[in-house]
Length: 419
Image (cartoon, rainbow, N blue to C red):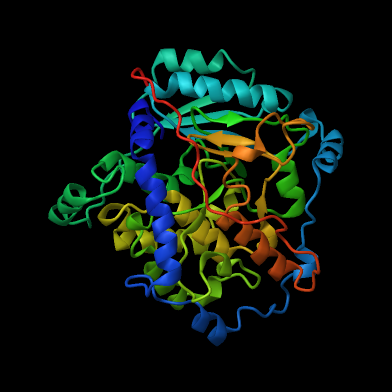
């Protein structure tokens, strides 16, 4: 959930956040880990998870060819919106104060994509939406718009969280939003409850949107159709390293769950994407403010049990586990590599990170500056491409990444007093 206060905090803490992310990665790669030393290697070795079981599809059968934008557009031509059979929606957790930022987002989504498809919008809030908010959103689209509120169970500090310990954590936290109840509730809700909300209960797919983001490319194809036809469960377009101070025990808690349920690990998973050469958690995750998901994944037995395990461990409150690393770890463990897709052709900006297709300054349907896309050839994106190629096409001769890989910081813009 993005608010004006949240955005001000982001800009205020951005240098610290980026330094922390980089420091977290360096520490993860070069120093013995204290609380994230557990390894998945012995689990895979003991269970034989890398072997394809009888009755399962092989990597070759599941391989999804990386299509060009032109191929996507050609596929879209054979799937006019009025004939589509995709039960999907554009979804956001927002507040009434986000109206202007959300209107900007909807205007871009309508112009770039949804005016041709009319997928419904679903907005949920921890309080009732105002009439002003509802009218302001509906003015921008011909699509159906649904508004809902959250129940107490999905938006609370659970009863198993010790109040004194939690109060101390909030008082001493040295990371952004460390003192906030609402931010932690938001992360917990996005991790385990959004896909069960009554307004989403009958959806097959959702596309998460947020206020104040930008979409730089006309989309000549339907990502929902593309995902359904290719068996893709999770789509993303920005990958970064996490601020490690917020997740000190997340990896060990994950490995504990996996050791108890090794049968949940996909045979051709991307687990190696999340660890460095020494098997330590590297913090790589898909930024979940943009994600397109087959909701059967979040409703699956393995994901639900994983979330419940994390929830009972208390890390959403005793630390500040985000929905992005939770979603990313689950997708990397429980899905096959071919079921996770990088939408590199969708130019996107979320303060203050931009991803932009190559050569968009001079050609194609995107208008953005790829030279400012610091995540495009970043560490986590490159590692994802390399690991996915190694899993799906182990005999490939062409490198998955041909350009230099780097860790860079975005340009910080001036913040006006009224923001």
